[in-house]
Length: 329
Image (tube, rainbow, N blue to C red; front, side, top):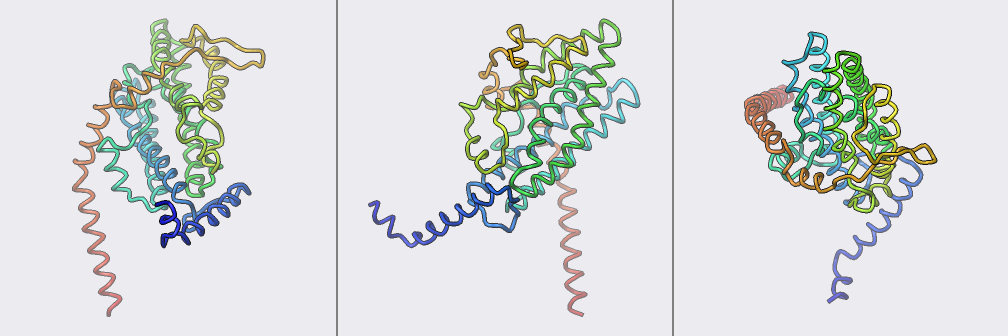
């Protein structure tokens, strides 16, 4: 049975693919960028489509928790800033869907997979924004964690993804500063405002740490992504970098990290207590506080926008016919 497989017509293709994979890895090791028309292993393409599409879905779904507060922002300045931020997130999603399309993926198929619940997005967006302080925490912690994860992606081996991330990171850095400024204002305000800020930190701290993904020993895709230099640091390394950067910021605000077991080691790193990974798994399985609400909102928006897509397709078809007619004259 096995020798029949060796004698199959695909034998030459397998040898060619092995040689191509060797040349491909040599380019990766030499820090060369891979572009859309370059040869790449199917597993590399599949890994990128999965990661980039999930990243794009996260940007789009991530508009919902903050968009919920646009009409309730405490001032016109805050309202305008939050509206601009939500628009930025939408733009990030478009950049990333475009990057995924360069790999041969259809944007419609990617969106349909997300709406059907088959594709994942970041677990963090399945938590509710209960107070205005949550908007500050999202900017400070959620966008801060995103920056920690995304800056290395600017050196990703796949060119379109890396280039998209350069602009995304610049805008996310502004979002993070905006969130921290909200927290600073609350912490310098009344005792009630500071308590609201502390409550938001208490609720978001652990879900933010889960954003970096499961511990290294439980991560399914890290080895291949690291080998191909899609990923430059492990989940635990990025989580530790984030904690070390964030604890002093919380101390400056006068807030307490909700981790009684946290301590500083001899190297100066802040060591966190145990993370409840069962919660993470439940959220990924669709059982988080807002999973159903988020998908329902996206499905409704997609259905409500059907006429726009149909009108755009009709216009494009009409324009193509006109151009063909002009070319035939």
